[in-house]
Image (cartoon, rainbow, N blue to C red; front, side):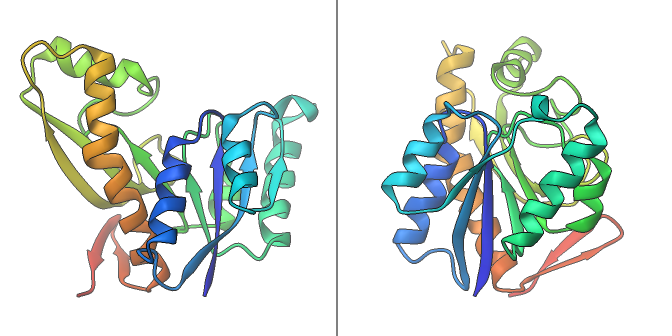
Length: 208
């Protein structure tokens, strides 16, 4: 059974999707054993408490140098014997130390079909605003491993979502979460915990 840490900063809707999937038995060979928040007031912490999941708070501003924070987060994860780290709306940049310590063991969910509308500055509503501005007909979400390139790690799963007439960034954001993010993030985590992902040349192969 692999130990899963979920890193959060806000409301924790993706955390809730993971908890719900776990409760339905959809995350095989894995369990959420820790929630780590960069924000002591994050509603995600209440979600963790309601589900009896231990939580920790680690704030970037409590460390004078970024490398100190990077080290502290890495040591915290190691102290919890974490096997896989899931970024679920974590709004603090990860440093080289934690990325290297958990190479191909950090999973992020991005609200577009990478490589479209991704990279530095593309998060939250901005992603959906740009998709609508471009006039694409299909968007979606991508679950991927994290490396030092923003949104540049190996892609695990993608799911497409149709854009509809009259969509606003807010409406589109909700549809992408409901139809894609909340489905493929738990699936990607389960695949990892089942040892069904092979990474080679920055690409993944899913074992049947």
